[in-house]
Length: 245
Image 1 (tube, helix red, strand yellow):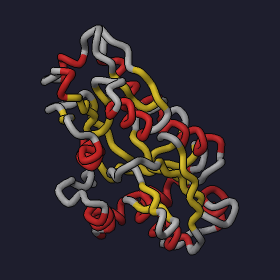
Image 2 (image 1 turned 90 degrees about the vertical axis):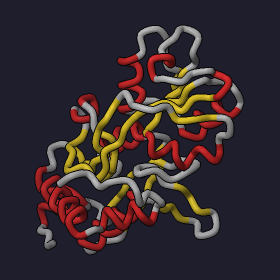
Image 3 (image 1 turned 90 degrees about the horizontal axis):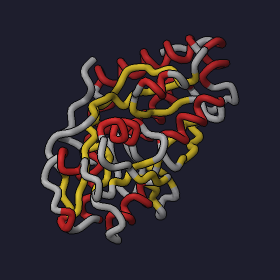
């Protein structure tokens, strides 16, 4: 793909593509991890962003945020140029979304000691639910829970620690993220079913039509060419489908 000056002004105003990512203790279709040996981040969104920067002919700069809400805020203010994040109505007010590359299902991971076996059993007054601040998942969980109020933390690592230390009974997050976190959380299990389904999509700031058009075309090409498939495979998600075109 070729780009013109209007695209460059909107998408790479500093000359570099500034990407926002969210780090976690384990990879997901969205979360990246930091490799101490290579001093670099890796994950699905890193692979996609490197390809996007290559299309633009510029270097990639990576900014890491506590959660997808903080990444959304940075994209809204122009501190970064592009991000990948779950879509919901609240977030659509702040940033502009292109195509989704993955469809996530939000559910709960629960401790064995909680005795919880179904989604409905999470919604009890004594159940301590933890989730990540300012995310689509915690907003959806809060809407669906009528008898308990989720506890909010800033990072995946904090939520993992609450489950590990017995400070929470249930953790709200996406299903594929739990599959990689399970080895770090003995005596826990993932509940069947979910309370939210939404796409993880590429996003740019609002009011940037040329940038949105460019990244939308890029993401469509990335799905058609197999780039998204290869990125998911490399992150360990070979059984997870790419979002439909």
